[in-house]
Image (tube, rainbow, N blue to C red; front, side, top):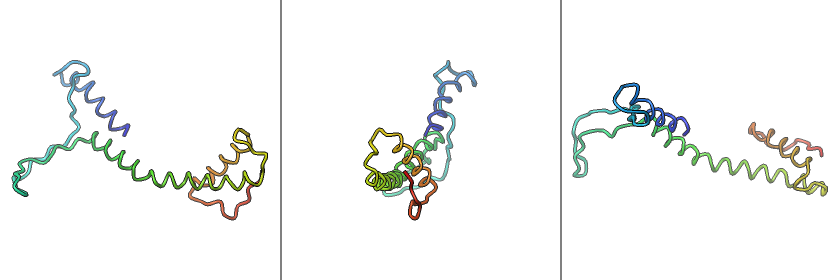
Length: 126
């Protein structure tokens, strides 16, 4: 997403100066593919050109789709992490929400679960 946004900003800021057709910030987006192909009619509508494909805009769109696609997996990982922390807290009533031990345990569990592993069979010492 950031790459696509930066690509559009660079095009708008500098290409007018580079190709000497506009002032700073008045450039045009030039990172696109424009294909010309045969004319055809589909469902009563005539098509003479293929839509212009902008690389930066496609990067932004694909980035958003990836975020939406993997959001559910991220939520499942967060839920697994919370469920892993609850038994540890139940076993030690001295752990409060602000305690340093809880933060250490959360960090350890995040590191363990970030590799796709589960905490089954692992001893968690407090």
